[in-house]
Amino acid sequence: MKTKKSKPETSQLLILLLLLASILFCLLPRIPQDQTYHHFADSATLYNLPNFRNVVSNLPFLLIGITGILYVLLKRQHPLIKSQTPNYFVFFIGITLTGIGSAYYHTTPDNSTLVWDRLPMTISFMSFFSIIIIEYTEFSKKASLLITLLSIGILSVLYWCYTEYNGQGDLRLYIIVQFLPMIIIPVMLSVFKANRLTKTHLWIMLLLYAASKISERLDHSIFDSLSFISGHTLKHLLAAAAPLTFLIGIAKSLNKNSGQK
Image (cartoon, rainbow, N blue to C red; front, side):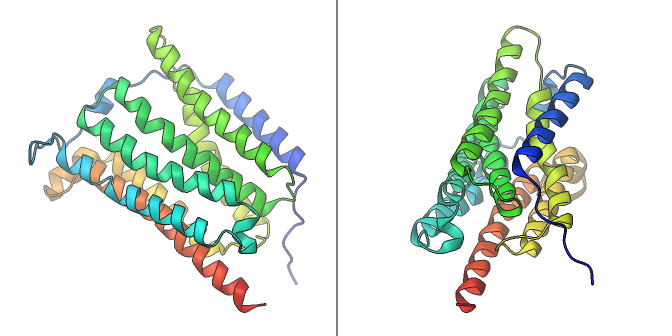
C-alpha cells in the first residue's frame, strides 16, 4: 500500500526555496517591463469610464475578498482557521486590495499605476504560499514565515520600481515571486499529505490561475474572436474564481472536520 512521504523539515524547505530563487535570479537576464503590456485589446469607454470592462471585471475580487475576510472572522475559532488566522486574513485582504489596485491601474494603464496592481497581488501570492507551506510541513513559526514571505513579495515590486526609475527595469524578482510558488505548490500537493485542506479545490484553484495567465497572453486573439470579451477581462474573471474556489474549499474542509468530531 502506497503512503505519502513524511513531511519535510521546514528549515530545509525554506533553504531550498531561497537557493532556487537565487539561482534563477542569477541565471535569468534582466527583464524590463514591456510597455506594450499596457496596450489592451479592449479599451472601450462606457459610462465615461475608460477601459470599462477591464475595470469592472475586478469587482469579483472585491466581493470575494470581503466575503473571505468576513468568513475568516466568523469562523476564526474553528481549529482549521485558528491555526492560520493571520495567513487566511491577509490572503483575503490581498484579494480585496487586488480588486481595488487592478481597477485603478486599468483606468490609466502605465508603470506608475501598475505598482498598485502588483503590490496586492504579491500579498495574495505570498500569504497563499505560507498557508500551503504550513499545511504541508511541520512549520511552527507561522508568523515569521508570513512576514518573511510578504516582505520578499513586496520587495520584488519595490525592486522593480527602483530599477524602472533608474532606467534599468528588472522584473526578475517579481516573476520569481509569482511563478516559483506555482511550480512548487503542485509538487507539494502531489508528494505530501495535507493536514486539513481538501486537495481538490487547491488543484482547481491552480488550474484557474493557469487558465487566467493563458487568457492574459491571448488578450487580442480572444477579443478578435469573441468581440464581447477580451482575454484580459476573461483573465480577471478566471483569476477571481481561484480565491472563490479556495473559499469554498475552506468551507467544505470546516464542515468535514466538524462532522468528524
